Image 1 (spheres, helix red, strand yellow):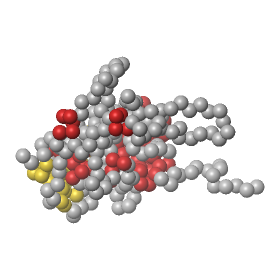
Image 2 (cartoon, rainbow over the protein chains, first blue to last red):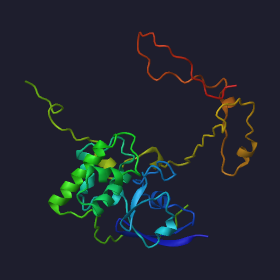
Image 3 (cartoon, rainbow over the protein chains, first blue to last red):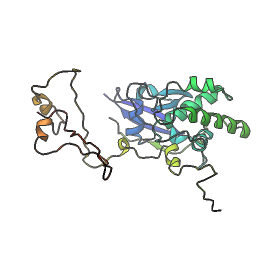
Image 4 (cartoon, each protein chain N blue to C red):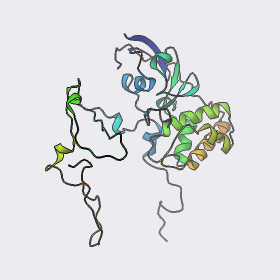
Length: 178
Length: 102
């Protein structure tokens, strides 16, 4: 039996009927077509699927879509606002925080939570905060530098860590889902 | 002296904008008409001899389009080629057959 859920994703509210076993990551990727959130391991080790749920970084392969009913989700597609990159996106670009980019969306959303909690984090705090996210390209140092870049930028320009989307009009009523 | 943009300056990667925006297309993001999914089934034993593989129940599972084993490859597929041979070298390239090649 399918459940009707309503989830706000990157400022837009989507209504879908989903199976109770559907994972949030599959809801985002398959039902909403937001493929920026990646599935790296399926076992909650790698953090590639990390999104913000009500401001908390969660691994969306460990959250059921029905648990996200009524929640406010931010994915990588929602980081930039009005065509302007989020400081964490700028940081990853400027500091070579990525190579293949597969872990990057999860890394960035976890980093957003770190910066929300600790606006001026030490390297140790950044590394501790990111220890649930695996990267097989960079060796992590550039990722730490990227987060520090974002922290500096946010301080200089008084920017919020969690993106504040203007109320988006789009809302889906489709019946897709797995 | 000729100075190019590649030296003495930070280079921003041109591929990054789509990667940091979640707009890149990885294989798992691509959907084609008639797309099928493959599952590799490996031996649960670390060191053992395959004497036979019974694929009957796999073939009967709803949604399964095809099941292939090494027997299907015999005589049709040679060993995997070495991807890049160094010209005029004495590089030894042992054959790499499909693992179950009875």
